[in-house]
Every structure is written in C-alpha cells, then in structure tokens.
Amino acid sequence: MSDLTSAHHIDPDQTLADRVIEALKTVYDPEIPVNIYDLGLIYKIDIDPGNRVSIEMTLTAPGCPVAQTFPGVVENAVKAVPDVHDAVVELVWDPPWTQDMMSEAAQLELGLL
Image 1 (spheres, one colour):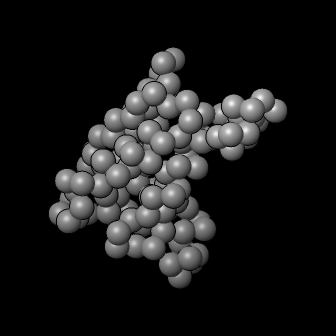
Image 2 (tube, rainbow, N blue to C red):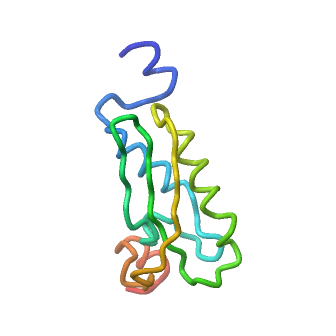
C-alpha cells in the first residue's frame, strides 16, 4: 500500500462509488435516527470521468425544515471523500419518498418490520 493510500485510509479495493456511499451513510436525517442512504433518500449517484459527483436525493417530506440547508451538508460529506473533485446535490420530489424505500436494516431499526 502506498503512503498516499494509507494516509487517507483508503481501502484500495473500494471503488470511488463505494467511498461516496460510505460518506452518505455518515449523514443522518435530522428527524429520523437513520442515515440518508439506508432511509432511501438517495435516488441517483453519478460520477463523471473527472470524479465530479452528482446526486439526486429527496427528503422525507417537501416541507422538511432542513430543505434549504441539508443538500449542502450532503455535498460537504461527499466532497470530503478522497479523490472526489466536486459534488452537487439536487433535491427532487419525484417519486415521493415512502417508507418502502428504506433498507430492511433501517426498517428493522425503526421497528417497522
């Protein structure tokens, strides 16, 4: 393992997409104690050849009080991933989020299964 890899704690077998998902799993919904990835709030992740990441995400409700600020929180988490050169998060409302979009683990954690 090179010094650069170990300095950034990068698993050489992990793809950039895996590292982006790992970063998304560190961001928690302010109202539900589950990360945004397992909640099913991330609809799309695109990484271009220049390692710029575009994310489409939603919130649990359009009137969510963090609608204005939360995309920036998500962008900052993704921009902190080594090798990511930029990140843009777009809020989308279609399809509307439902509890069915949560991972099984998230549903178990919230007592929904």
